[in-house]
Amino acid sequence: MQKSRDAISGGALRMIVLKADPPLKFPSQEDYAEAANKWARSLEAAVRRGLSGELSESEFVSLFYARVYDTNLESWVLGRARGGDLTGGPTYNDQVQARRLADFQSEFIDRFSSDLVRGRYSEEKEGPEAGLRRARAYAMQARGGANEAFVAAQEPSEAIAWIRNAKESCKDCIDLASKTWTASTLYEFPGEGHTECRFNCQCELQIIRTGIACFSREDLTPP
Image (tube, rainbow, N blue to C red; front, top):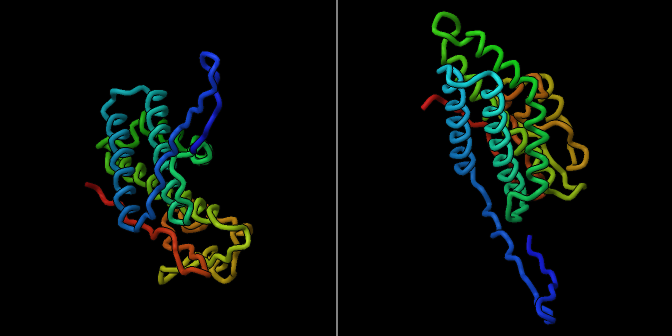
């Protein structure tokens, strides 16, 4: 954010101008897909380190939490930019929201770490790929934060539609799609994990006035 402040130096008044961060560009679905696959690779790399035995349980928790935070930070910024807020960043609020979303995952990360340390993803049990799939789920769930940021970028009275894309939707999504929402009343977001279909949700949010929709779900496959 651009700021100016007066400073007195040697009896003279001088103005110090701090340059603003450059504005963001309006992100495309392709931009989101590229970012989501990058997040998946980063989270998978952390799990591979955990599977190798080089990290203690607490070290894995710290590393994986940091990767989840970074994922949610980038996803939130992409979502608000898609919603029309092109303020350069990440801003302080972006970081606060990413921390909130990552903290929500803390209990699940602890369970993941415990499962990994106990050998749940060893070759003799579920196998490493099961652990990597679990890591990719965190990248998929970040779309929920992007959708929330997309809505937060609107005026409170902006009308929002919940669009169903799947041939068969869960009961929660059918109910949500049957209503018209505003930015101030919508309380669920596709992909965040609170609907019955969890992060596999294929629904989208659309600004009714402009027709602009947030990001579609991306299938994150192994590299």
